Each structure stands twice: as structure tokens, then as C-alpha cells.
Length: 347
Image (cartoon, rainbow, N blue to C red; front, side, top):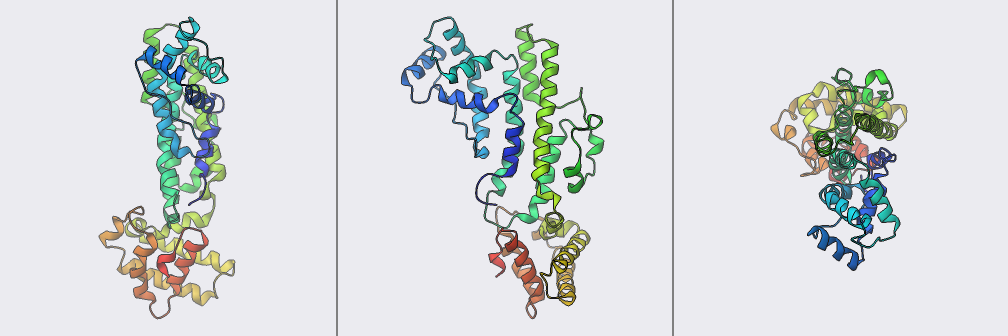
């Protein structure tokens, strides 16, 4: 899935609009960027030479390090703002400084940064894996379902997620108050620690503000999940069914794969993309032979899509049963090619 950013990245962005997190992270970098005198003031004050990293609004795979660096320098930025407010250092007089000054007045800014980092940690591996030209579509269903579950477990009742299918996950109404946990919401270890530390140091962090943080936390997660659900390819049966070409699933549940392949063939017949029912039957027969005789090999269970191309891996196994009439081979190749995820290795 190459070219541009994937939809979960935009979904994450939507979850933090109320906290102006993007604006704050940009300001942390901008305030010292290309201003040597200001950087010198900061270094002399804090005895640190660590500065913020640039935030990238259109490539979110870059922003996990940005969030981690922001957590490191945030205490020093508070010192810097304090020095400016007491006129020990000159006021930069920029919008970046105003943004930072406003953020440092928020007693829960560190908790919010921890939440931002936690969500980035969930989404970033998915973004990295699927920014590729290789044939990875058969894996996206399971991986996206797991990504959704990782987010949902933080604020949705566990019993609603147990044994939930990918189709159920994209249809789950996260705005339903009856589906949510409230007191038991998982805000993460980092955010909890930040809140406790501030409460220990200052009595100004009222319980009401913590409750408001939890409410905004849930609403932010809800927005993220809704946007992923809205844009998710899991809504399409073909994406869920092409999981039958995932070697690990072929190994662990060949009956499921057989049923999914039948559904794919039926869909292609309905769309007149196959040359009749006889061709469809032959594809199912050849795929069934593959499932019966080959997929119990350990290589299928241990297959890693980032280490070897799927089409290259499957070719020698499928070609054993299609050397005379390469129907299944051609069909699987077309599945991968039409989805735009490669398939050259099956040629």
C-alpha cells in the first residue's frame, strides 16, 4: 500500500483536535528553529541541548519520536516559560511561544502527551507495515482488526470485544454509552503516573479536571475509532475473504480459507470476471488440493510477509496443482494485482 499516508493516520489526527496537540507539537519545534540566541538562552537555563523534533502533519509514521521527544523536553519548556514570565529571559513574542505558554498552564498537559504517544504506538506499526508495494492485502484484515481492538479495549466493555469478528468491529457503535466503561477506562500507565505526580506536587489538580480529562480521552478515542471504521476496508467482503491467502491462516484454519475462496469465486462470477461456473469450480478444486496437501508445512505457519513476498512464497506450492491448467494460479495473481498489492511473483 504505497503512496501517501494511510487512513488510520488521519483518524488519529481527528482524535486530538480539542487538545490542539498538533499545534502544540509544532510550536515546540518552531520556537527554537533557526533562532540561535533563543536556543542559547534555553541551553543556559536548562543545561540541556535537547530540542523538539519537527511534527509532520501528513506523515504520521514520523510522529512517534516527536511525541517521545516532547515528553522529554516538556519539563524544561515549563522552566523556560517560567523564566520568560518572570522576565529572566526575553519574551519571544511569537505565536509559537503563546501556544506553548498556554499549554504549560494546563496541569494535565503531560497526561495528554502520554495519551498521544500511546495512540501513536498502537498505530505506527500498522502504518509502517502497509506503506509498501508488496502483496500484503491478505494480512490487512487481521492486522486492522487487532489495531481496532487495541483502541477499543481502552474504553469499550470487554464482553463486547470477546470473539468479535472484523465485520462486527467496524459496525460497533462506540458512541453508545452502554458500550463504554467509564471508571475503568484505561488511560495508560504514563498518563496515570503523570496525573499522580502532579497531584502529589500540587493540590491544584482538582478531581473535576481529571474527570474532564477522562471524558475527553474517551471522546478522542471514539473519534479515532469512528474515522477508522468509516474508512476501513474491512467493510468490504473481498478484503475480509482474501485472508484465505494468508499462509498462517491457511495452516491453522484451512476450512475457513476454503469457504472464503468459494465466496471470492462467487463474487467474481457475479461480476463476470471469470469465464463461467466451470472455471470457478476448477479454481476451488485446485485451491482445495493446496489446502489439503501443502499448508500443513511449518513454513506456512512461520511465514513473515515483511521478510518474503507472498506471491513468491505461494508460487511453487500452487504451481504443482496448476501446471496443466493454471486456473487457480491466474486467479490468485489477479486477486493481488487488481487490489494493487503486487502479484508479479506469480507470473
